[in-house]
Length: 75
Picture 1 (tube, rainbow, N blue to C red):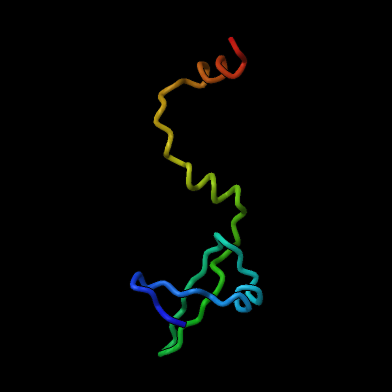
Picture 2: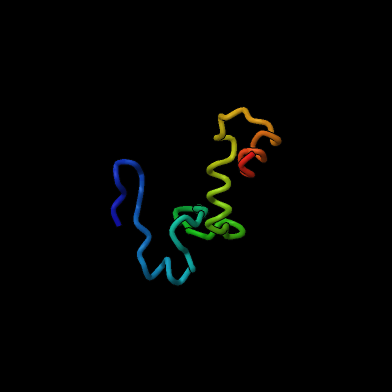
């Protein structure tokens, strides 16, 4: 494997398959001496969890819950 100028590597498909890694999964790199181990990070998150995490704190519209409910009900 070759490291890019950004410090990135591509995990081979066979390794991803054996570890059960999918796009968007997080991994940890554990260093022991001169050996680096790639391990899945904690509990895998669903696509929905990743979307919610990405959107949290992004809203910039200052509407009250009552106004939003009225808008969704067509009032």
